[in-house]
Amino acid sequence: MHHIILDSETDFDGWRKSARALALNDVQPADVTWRVADDAPELFEPTYQPLEPPQATFNVPARFVELAEIAILHRNPERFALLYRLLWRLRQRHDLLEIATDPDVAEIVAMAKAVRRDEHKMHAFVRFREVGREQTSHFVAWFEPEHHIVELAAPFFARRFADMPWSILTPDICAHWDGHAVSFTPGVVRSEAPTADRLEETWRSYYASIFNPARLKVQAMQKEMPRKYWRNLPEASLIKPLIKSAERTANAMIAKAASEPHKPQKRLEPPEANDMPRKHADDLETLREEAADCRACHLYKNATQTVFGEGRQTARIMLVGEQPGDKEDLAGKPFVGPAGQMLDRALEEAGIDRRMVYVTNAVKHFKFVPRGKIRLHQKPNTPEIKACRQWYERELAAIKPDLVVAMGATAAQSVFGKITPINKNRGRAIDFDDGTRALVTVHPSYLLRLPDADAKAREYRRFVLDLKIAADVLRKSAHAA
Ligand code: URA
Image (cartoon, rainbow, N blue to C red; front, side, top):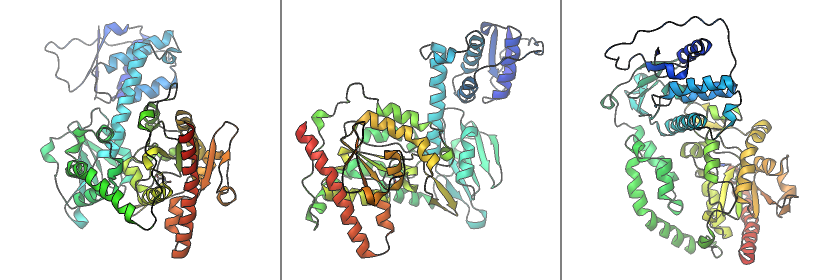
């Protein structure tokens, strides 16, 4: 029997060295035990049987190494043995990882997915609290990851909060950034983390500002922001009161809209009866999960998370924007910031219920450059648009809308698959060979940026007129159904 002791829970190099030596000495997986050095030692510590240093090497698929590096961060204590079993079997069957139904393969893939999901949750739900003031201030957060992801996630926070010294405290390990390098110290207990400060109010007002009662879906919201994270979130104290008052607020919004001069056209109600997922369609939830791990271009490195599309799979209209902005990046939802508010208003005036449309972006990660405390939006370039197009195509295939509305040049480039001028093509639905119909219009942020009030009002009216073309398509498809 061989008893391998790794230096830490995340000691991938140690696992790799031992696994290689074991495999080259033909040690069967059943003849190996694995544990981490600081686990409680066995009462009678087994004697360690040294292995012959390996004389040879062997290759495994690169995908195995990628999966193993991530899956080893899972909290399941059996992971080291599972990885060795897979390595052992891969030497006999090089294409083993292609067999998705193999129990070992399925388990390792599920573990890697769970680790990535936990990493995304950490990116999204760490909230720093300021300790000290001005020159001596330091930002401290408390987080309880499900898996051993702190070292994996720390570089993201170093890039994102490069100009502030921070510490992320967790029960397993703590990460620290001093403006130059990330370092790690042993885990601590929760009572060592600060609980309140002046940043709390900022988080609360930000959350209240993006909370749209008309789009409240309690279950979906709780799925994305699971309860276990609530106690560390300053904005959590708002969730219950906001849900409670949502219905009241939504009714007030509708009443207010009705009394405003631009009376919206009659709203088309969502087709509830028709709201079952269509047969053979891709599942949007699966796509969303896959996209959460997208590494097709470099933009994932600095963004908080993938901002996937939002809406029903049965939506007849798909609205495509450019890329998430600052607020969308933090909230994980498209069009919740100022451009989203402009869009909501125009949709309302065009007589389109936002709940009936699917809203997405051509590029699903926020591209920005940091400028002090703010993040300046940067237009995505052609390689980034192309890298992300797979998601648009798969959303399109899943939804099969009657009309795609491309808002702005980036969206038009993605929807048409080539650079497509807006003014030359706007104002009419354009049919593609594959049966897709598309409409081109401006991006709502363009309206926000116009300095001249008259031009702004004129362009806004044109935007609403474009959306009315979409509303007509919607009405016609409702009649035809
Ligand atoms: N601009 C976009 O193009 N998309 C968003 O989601 C927000 C702003």
